[in-house]
Every structure is written in structure tokens, then in C-alpha cells.
View 1 (cartoon, rainbow, N blue to C red):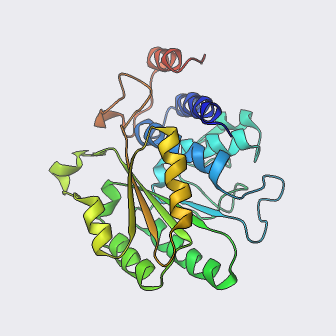
View 2: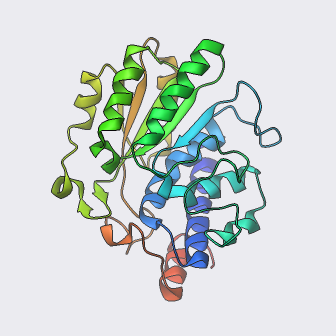
View 3: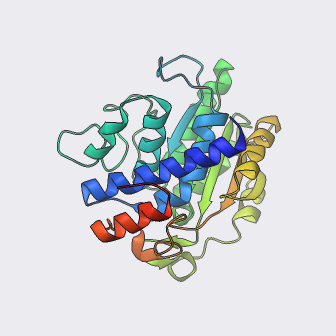
Amino acid sequence: MEISKLIDTARVIRQDIIREIYSANSGHPGGSLSAADIVTALYFEVMDIDPEDPNKPGRDRFVLSKGHAAPALYAALAERGYFPREELLTLRRTGSRLQGHPSMNRLPGLDMSTGSLGQGISVAVGMAIASKMDGKGRVYALLGDGELQEGLVWEAAMAAAHYGLDDLCAVVDHNGLQIDGKNDDVMKVMPIDEKFRAFGWNVICIDGHDMAQIVDAFAAAKECKGKPTVIVAETHKGQGVSFMTDNAGWHGKAPNEEQARLAMEELGGVL
């Protein structure tokens, strides 16, 4: 897909994120919006997947380690054709397939149930070991930067390098904020790039809202042999909505009607 079309698709994904969370009156807009460009690139350009055959053997797999950003993933899956877009408005409702965190037993296209931070990348390492043995498919994992405060992440990083998992590509959504405020105030995670290099990873640093850089980074990751790749994507929490941007207060808060309409106006859509 052309870069311009990917950018347009990411804008639609952001519109759907707002619609989902407003409809549910619950959810995590900040981290969903910051991850929208990355998720768009994966689902519409990078990954070998088939909505007509969600369980196709040898497919690429995606693990949303920062599971609270599920609205971004659901929007991408719906736009890609895994389920009707109208279903997005059932987010977090009783009986809905769109739970607050992804549930692989409820919805097609999900390869892992996530939400307990730190665990997603460990599962992705296991998937990558299996894929490497089979010689089929790549594995992608999206982590939050606050998630790097979990020791489990670094155990997984160590294992991925030890086993030479060049079929694994992790992305760190580095927006600098978490539910309690700035990462630096809660528990410093910098320097992210140097830490992953020390653990034996190939490291690519990009602007996580520059679609061309995102696509090029995934292509470079695929070419790297003998070690896993991490893409450290510099992003803004709440990207695309002015009053949510770089505001930790929008980590897990739903907009009211006035705020939702303003957000949709800025994103070029209607509520």
C-alpha cells in the first residue's frame, strides 16, 4: 500500500479508536492513539496474513504486549476485514467479543490474549522459537515503554538473543508516559536502545508517527539475520488529538460527548 494510503488508513484507525472508547465510556485512548501508525503499517503493509483464513499455517503473528491498547488493534482488524466494523461499538460491553484486553478465544485474528504487562514479549519469543523451527512466518510484538520496567521483559530479551531469533521483531511504543505520569518519575527506562544492544539485539530508532520510516524499519528488520530486532519508535501519547497529546491523564479515560466530537473533528471524521 502506498504511504499516503497508509497515512489515511491510520487516520481512520484513530477515528475508530475514539468511537470505540466513547461508545464504551471506558478504555485507553492515549496509548491506542500513539500506537495507531505502527499497527496500521503492520496490518496493511508488513504482515503476511489473510482475513479469509485467520488461522492460516505459516502466517505472521502479532502480539499486543501492551494489551490495554486493544482499541487500536480492534480498529485495524475490523478495517482489514476480520469482523464487521459496526462491532467496534460493542467494545467492553457484556458479551462482546471485543473485551477490554484482547482475548484470542473470542475474536478471529488474535494470536494471544494479553493485558498483564511484560508477558506479551515472552510469549512472542516462544512463538518465534516455534516459527524458526518450522521455517515459516515472522512474529511481531508491540510493547509499551512503561512495560520495560518489568523484569520479565529483559528475561525474554536475553532468551531471544541467545536463540538468534531473527524472525522476531519487537516494537517499543516510546511515548514517555504511563498511567502514573512520566516514566522518568516512576522508574527510568532510558536508554532503551543501548539496553537492547547490550542484550544482543539489532536496534532501529525511528519517529513512530512517520509512516515511511515505520515501513522502512520493518523492511530492515526482515533483512537482519542472526539476531532479533527491536524498533524503538518515538511517539506521542494521544497523537492526533490536541488535548490528549502528551497528557498522561488520557492514559485510561474515556472522552465525554463534547470531547469526543472535538477529537473526531480534529481527526477529520464524525462521531
